[in-house]
Length: 174
Image (cartoon, rainbow, N blue to C red; front, side, top):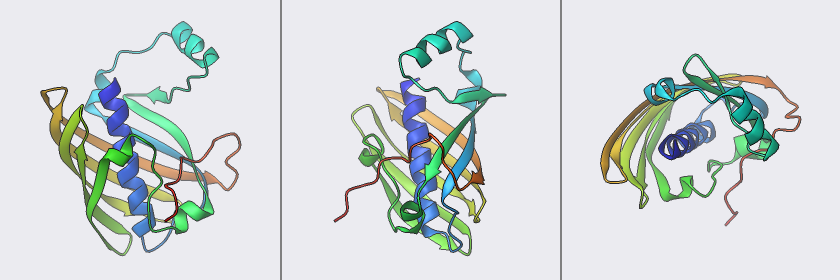
């Protein structure tokens, strides 16, 4: 589960890097992201009573629908206009390399060098003002064991008001 959470974060990092590079910037506001992978399809379903206990403890779990993880993310105007992606602590140990774009299409590499996970990945996709798609492939070693991951992400803009959904942490300005 920890590996999956890490890879989701890395995938989001790649996708948000692309938002900064896309010719036609995303609209700021609330977005719904749907991520599909073989690992998510194989995840055991968490019983409703356990989900409720986690919720009471302040743990927010994304919705799982047909082997896909669906969650909402808030992008501020500053986030979609900057040249660097939003980041959180875990993703900072992975780096974006070789990002390129042509119109609204993008591609790039992600290199991870964490104690628990080392490897490389590739992300490619497209972004418009109100939708996005990406395909991410990763190959490496996690906790000393070979690990591969294929993830497909789609996103759609839901509106300008993020409600109670908070934006991801921004990297410090230099």
